Length: 293
Image 1 (cartoon, rainbow, N blue to C red):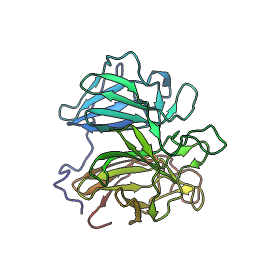
Image 2 (image 1 turned 45 degrees about the vertical axis):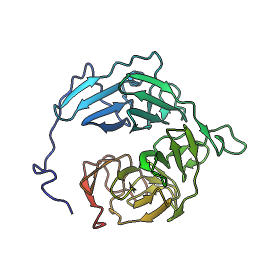
Image 3 (image 1 turned 90 degrees about the vertical axis):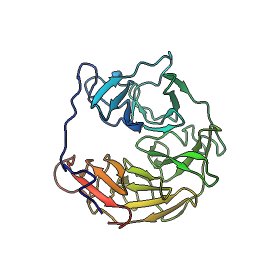
Image 4 (image 1 turned 45 degrees about the horizontal axis):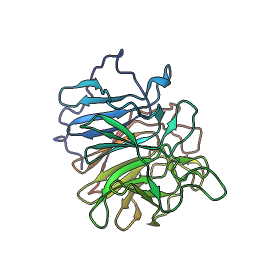
């Protein structure tokens, strides 16, 4: 389980930033590439239209830097999107646009070496719209995305759950092949999850497994979840694991040496599963993959 050798100081350290160049934000997307944290977008309550910026944080030097793109096109301001790293590219998917609060199915690609944005023209073998509706299946926000190994060893992006204005809490899993620029809609099996929003996911390379925790769920009724699931992307199977017994959504999670660390989130939304009167939690929790506790 948790070892003090992982974080021997066992306390938080504040990393300063220049508020004139780096604005605080919520519901942004972040990914670690070569010890640099890349951050894109998010919601800033005083000036939301400003947040279509891309930033890097040097983890070793504790230094923030704005990224200047060489391309004239770039994604517009959004929040609730995801971002993953693949083959020298940052893939930004979905989210809600700040300009009109519409949820989109856009996939943007940022070339790290060339410093260029491009909108990906992808295809989907299952069709992009719900029957009798004009709303895209892939128009999601509050979802999760992870790069995993597929059955034939290639890498793909697995997008789980989120909110879609046609189906509301999406119970679906989608796969995107970045090499062929193609989406697929595979059948899943195992434990049924009736849709999640604002959950967290981490990918364990050793077991090729995605671990999903928490979120706002619609099944069996709208409530906060404290559940933990494992998803095998090869067998496309969900398995239910130990619960934290502390429901939350809009939290963050990372995986370090076989331990999933979960931080923060909203623990109160006037449902029967809410805990306490405060909306947001300072809790830091840990989950051992090996011990399932």
